[in-house]
Length: 207
Image 1 (tube, rainbow, N blue to C red):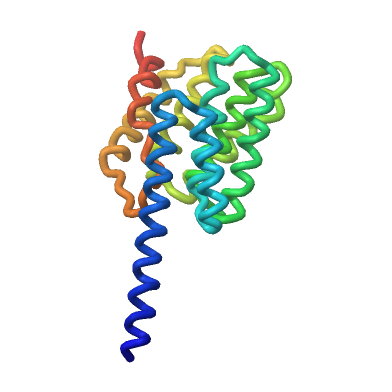
Image 2: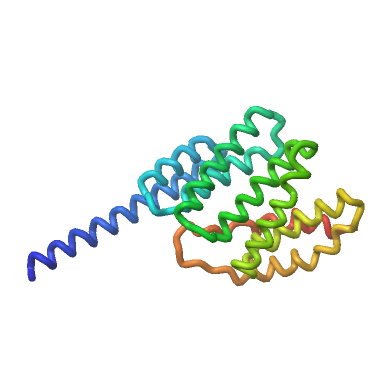
């Protein structure tokens, strides 16, 4: 019995140390990202992902950095390289967590980045995919605030493109605000971003 207790104690300590190492690594990666050291953060997230073989979150965040870095960039080669790498990371994440609304939202943003980068080439082929992804998110998690907010922004952009009023989708933004207020997750580092983007999206509701 004593040997079993000692063994269980060592296993528990090992689990705590591993968890602590994971949390420290993730914290450091977010710190690098916050300090605009994007590629260093991506590399660290990738190393964590390879160590945490059943955890989709490090791949997810590595993909997110690549995607968000492309918005506003003029470097075509860098954009294409980053978006390809982001898709690879999301593919890895999807093998670890199927039917995951957060991964689908990130994939929608990836396709949005392609459309923003080169609309003449990608708008016709990828716009239906973006819409399909957001619709699937709403089936999986109807109250996911990121799904609501970014789908509303996507529809606002489409409305402007076709000469329609983007303000028609402002109630969706208000709904997202409510869902952000009520959002809660027990899993460390689970996605909860997006609330700080509400005001930017709400600019479409003025005038």
